[in-house]
Length: 437
Image (cartoon, rainbow, N blue to C red; front, side, top):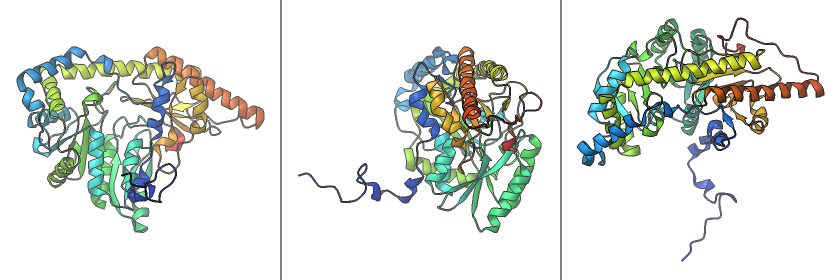
């Protein structure tokens, strides 16, 4: 017998009125919405932060898989621990040691990518109406997660040296005076996504002092820290502070995202709750992928492979900056010393989100700056990703983007007489746009 649906909801979803209130915060990010377009072969995508996994020799991975199945097949195909394989957790300590972090394998929780760790942490800490402090701009999917738990994001401005400590003090004081409950500071201090800038060592110390004095936990997200192009970046914030920092890491950028393996390093009490939340969500992370990655770390020259990735991304960043200097010299952009992204500032008259359809028509895709703000900011900014396209594709993509930008300016000058704009770069390309300061 067919049961009739309740007379509720709307024409598109009869169950609309049955969803939990927190689902109102769920929305497709602007990055995800671009994937269908950007995947067309004729489009040069400067939008997604996809690692160039072709630089990883396949035999390293297939050899590790074969070894695992030959030696540990039944274990690899079975359920595992909610905390993760002990051997892999010990190896994760070796990875984190490269960024100055010391810790215990007992305090490492393996997750299905660091994105999953971010979601578990938010689930543990966020109640409706809570406030998360984050850089402005900030990682797009982190904001989606925070909103899904009905929290608000308060953006603190940045400059070329990262988050501004003075502005952080002001925001904390304002929020507390308004009776708001601040749960944590979410930060990507090294090769920031999307801005590409790195928080200086002095500011890391000052921000940790501020948060300790104010009783605010720090959530340090560090996907890109080992992918530096020149000098090593400052040591991780977790290397300075044990109890006040939860650190998130991942193999997605230094190995491959298809393994879906990340981790959290947390103080003991938080670690216990993360394990319980992990078990409630996925029961256990994949035993097979954990053992394969562990075998890779045991037998392959993984440090050398990271160095290969550094060279690949350095070449692509240099191609992007050279193309920007050639085709859009009036604009300003950041010059990252590592990671995946350049943050571009458009003339004030242009809107990156409104301009995107024209860009796609010109066969180039980017991510509009609005994706990285919870408060509607970023309309004059674009995130450009240099990690996946080849240098030749990058040059083609920037040339197409320049055609779009110049075409928009020509239209404004022709029809509105508003073609004037003030460039913000004063000495090269190493400084972030003025609206990040």
